[in-house]
Length: 75
Image 1 (spheres, rainbow, N blue to C red):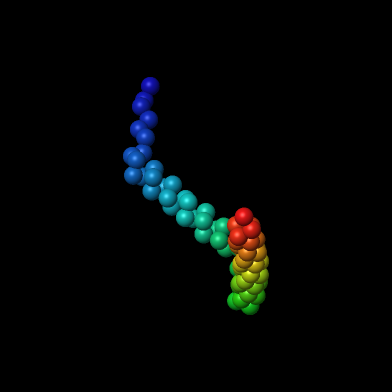
Image 2: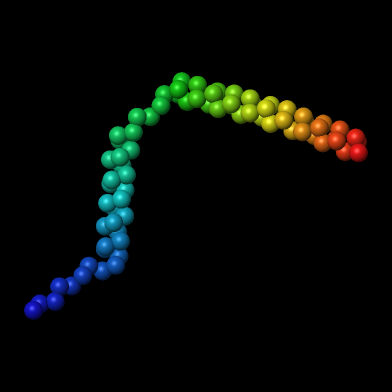
């Protein structure tokens, strides 16, 4: 029975790397990229949400600090 010689490690690995990038390129062609207008709109929504939640957390912290200070001064 004849021995079947395997490809060397470098050829196998290089083949896998080439296949990966070839498939990556084909998948990236399928992506629907947002327009700059959509990106700006989404960024504004994110900034607005961060500001609203930041104010909410700041108010909660202020009320909690005031309450704890009042309890400590009470006793």
